[in-house]
Image (cartoon, rainbow, N blue to C red; front, side):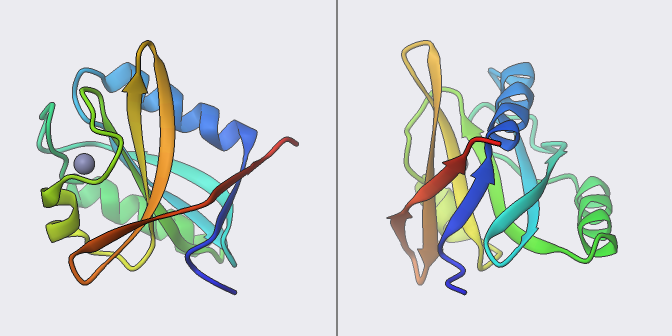
Length: 136
Ligand SMILES: [Zn+2]
């Protein structure tokens, strides 16, 4: 299975959007657990940076999220975070600090609406990859 491709169910999108909306104007972040590129669980993680322009997952919350994902027999398939003030693409910091070989979902605001784009970050380069959302 190509680990660049990610499929989410509509409720996963709502869960991420609710979290980033609550945290805005601060950046918000979290992990997505799943298998074979199919997302099964969305776990918001506290942004320890409490910043409008960067995020750092709070280590204990991050560990709890990873433990939950693994306890369900899943693996981390994506990271998400928000850019309440844009841009819709990864920042130079996002690219420099990308620490997992998983899809990065970036939520940004286009007018009043949040939009999600996904990227594969490797070797200092970010390439957009398709994000498939299925209605269930
Ligand atoms: Zn970012």
